[in-house]
Length: 365
Ligand SMILES: *Cc1c(COP(=O)(O)O)cnc(C)c1O
Image (cartoon, rainbow, N blue to C red; front, top):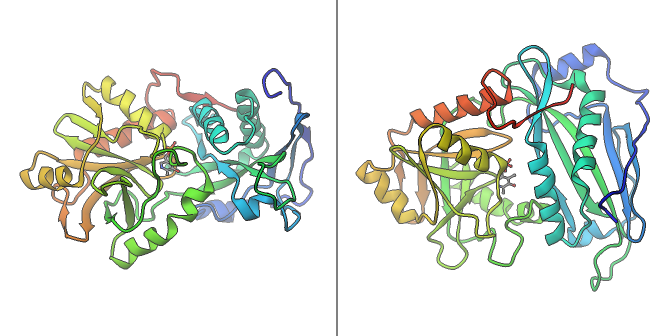
């Protein structure tokens, strides 16, 4: 049903689009995820019929029956990627087919229909082309793209998943995710709460994972930290990830990142860094790393840098750690050399100022 189906998009332009002056006012200080562009994408799915009614339309609210299953059972998933204005004016995204594949991996776990990868990428291209003036020209800024899917059947029965779904894409101009630039974050090791357990939804990019995480993030802030770090569900010993970002540990010229055991989100940025590490002559290992190894490594000086990575905040240094049994500093608490080098390299590829040996850049217009 979802394979060779050719979708053609109906295009309806907004007659209430913001004026250039209004747009420039937003782009002068976009923040993150606060203002949206003039259009959005919508594609509907009905069991037995497949994907239909693909359209680009004016951005605006949805009208949904209060019994719609997403409100009650959280059958929802999303993606996140960016469009970058490159040197020379070209607008490009980064590895959109990796996001398309992960979208479908999440869909399988959430009993939702897969969207053909080409339709996913085409939907992004159409929205970015239409709202191209919303792609910021300021260095380091971008247009954040948020594809998502919700279950739309108005029924409260839980014995069967929904038979109807809606896929959408919205877009929002974005400054740096963490305000204040490349500033090391402090992290709280969450021993009370668990994000994911084997067999659960940890690897799926679904809203429910975030709903269950907010209380731990709030606790991290109460402890004076910026972000929560999740540990394994059994022993609360092994590091999984940070808030919405994957973690890397730097031992000299060796990178270590937790392996994908099904409980952490397989980040596109994580995957890109593993590939870039090899290009830069670094060794990279995917394996378990415990909080003891983290603390002892920092104490002995062997563990020199720790950073978090994800599309929204790219690469962010971790400067200090706090847990129920006390805390410690990573290196001297300032951004590490390799952290900054990898960040330069990756953003250089994304903004078209560095060679792109793996063809990650996907030009849109
Ligand atoms: C999206 C996300 C990441 C990072 O993935 P990228 O593809 O690199 O943006 C990491 N952890 C969680 C929980 C996420 O939702």
